[in-house]
Image 1 (cartoon, rainbow, N blue to C red):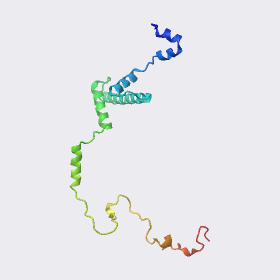
Image 2 (image 1 turned 120 degrees about the horizontal axis):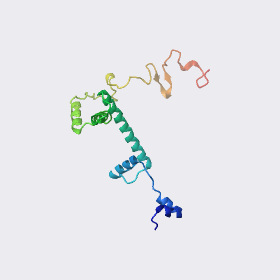
Image 3 (image 1 turned 90 degrees about the vertical axis):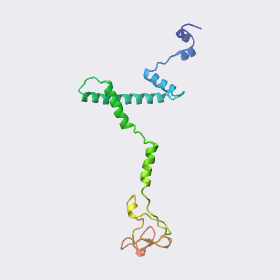
Image 4 (image 1 turned 45 degrees about the horizontal axis):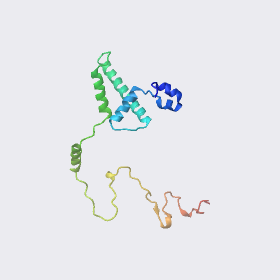
Length: 173
């Protein structure tokens, strides 16, 4: 074997493909190391690009916010406290902490203290009362409009809306 991989690659084109070393950005290498440390062995190249974009956007937003805190304190240099405050503000705004199970049990208990309305034991369909409707109350068939046998109308919407206008069917007449 040759001591110089470049000399061996020039003799054999297939070896040239194997010995090509790809240089990747340091940030991409860091993201790849994070993926490996979390047990991810394979990923699409776009995953690394997406995570790098997220890291860049997150760091940019934190630094912009910390610069605002720096200006508010009438300083020219951003310090660690500005960055910590910016991260804390970002976490409170973007990542909402979910309530604990105990908190959810307390909320449910307080709601369950209010008794449900008593149901009527009458036969038929139970229609909600006007005050319990979520949307506006509307009717499919307005008053005065009733369906007769075989889908014919009885008592139309308008004074002149009668079947005796002649013709029947599509052509009118």
